[in-house]
Length: 177
Image 1 (spheres, helix red, strand yellow):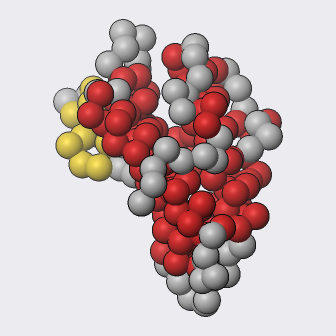
Image 2: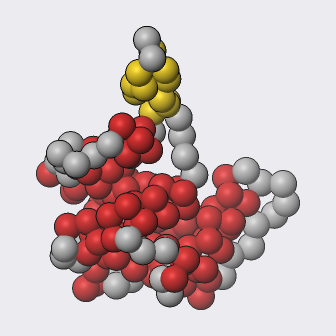
């Protein structure tokens, strides 16, 4: 990942953790919990996009790998498959599963964080596409953000052979806003 993109991804995660801390200290935690959830997913997607960008540059990457990693379609042109200029978006869970299967030969559903991440996706979807009032608890958000942090650490370990640089801080933010 480019240094600037790396820094932005880490900042997004730190912002999510800071909003979680603010929720813990607030008599009105809901806005902070909502912000923490949305930012945590922005951080996860930003990290995944950076990892995918690096993977797409590797020598052993197939055309199908490139399509999934760069979120582009495939089209048949003159009897040959090629990447389409059109975007082809994949669900976050599917991209994670693909990266783990392709680069770690692992089933993502076997990781301890997977069920919490799936619950977090459902909560995020309920929040950004609301049909009813969304109620989140501090303990839920701690579980959700911890699952995202654990997932990122396992992605980095699977792809780069070393964990995520901010993994050791857990839920503790370095920000003070």
